[in-house]
Image 1 (spheres, rainbow, N blue to C red):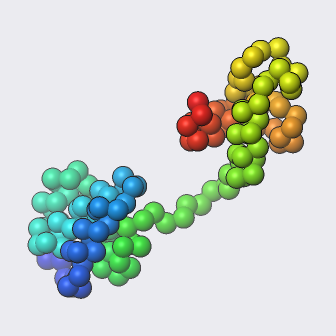
Image 2 (cartoon, rainbow, N blue to C red; image 1 turned 90 degrees about the vertical axis):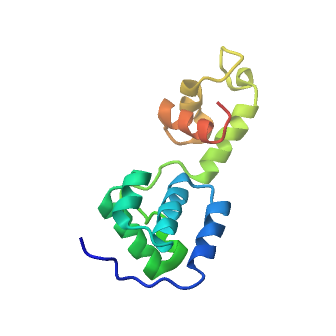
Length: 141
């Protein structure tokens, strides 16, 4: 197996330590943790076995860190359809949840995800699961 021929700046370890203390994203934390071990001198294969990364994935993160710094540890934008749910719509759903459903013509005293999805006030047809996801992310469900 070839030896990794990368040179890291002197402040790489301290930078990774700061990332490990400040990041709240689990994926970035794991990547920083693994890259830190490689920067300290551990072999890629040893680190990948210990921290349960594939060798190729770890190699990719190490190379990205070497070329891009901390920004290289974050996920790149993914392709695909943009989300239908805008921030304004999520905010409107939050306001709607805070109101009494009986005032909006519901026969129940609590909102259901289905009723919120069909609420005419939003102006957008959402699925029950989309409403549920928004409320779950905002910790209202």
